[in-house]
Image 1: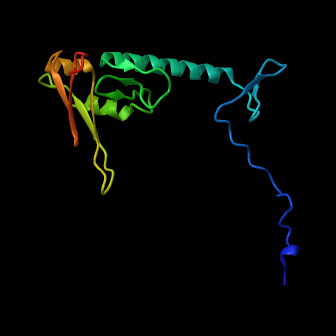
Image 2: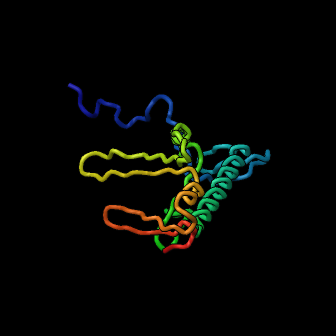
Image 3: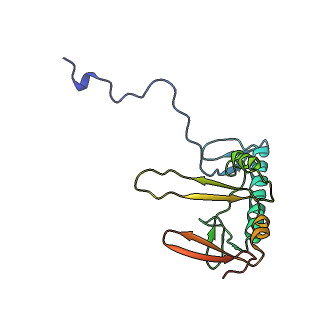
Amino acid sequence: MTTLDDLDLFDAPTGTQPEPRPCRRHNWYPTPDGSEVCLRCTKVKDPATARRGKNNRSRGLTIQRAVLAEVGMEHIPGNGPADGRDSQFVAEVKSGPSWYSVRVEAELDNLPTAGNRTPIFVAASTPGPGKGRRRVYVIETLGDLVKRVGPHAQIAYWAPDWVATKDIGGASA
């Protein structure tokens, strides 16, 4: 009969150790050879990757500011839950291939525009029983909407428990 004393329960494990988890935020430290190493995870900093990240962030913020200015919203600085706001709405702006899918562009391009029609793409969620369905409406540009309803038309936004209007010329109503 084997007892607990006969088992090697407290010996060090054999084999390879798993690699440490990467840092969520690196703490870079310069080395004598001119490179930089993270003090937490010992990763060597790649200057090309760091530059690409800075360029992508800069491009994203430029797009964000332009979109918010186009719809007449104030830009909220920092990295909070919302990017812009006005008197009635808050907005989160996302750009890039992972947020604005090639599929959405393809669907907008495939819609027939004969007779001066403006294409609108609608994506509807199917959340399952007991949850409300959401729909997202995509129109090519705000200019397309202005062309249809005029520069100072009121657009009604509707959700199950509220209705709000916004002057698409920029000023809130």
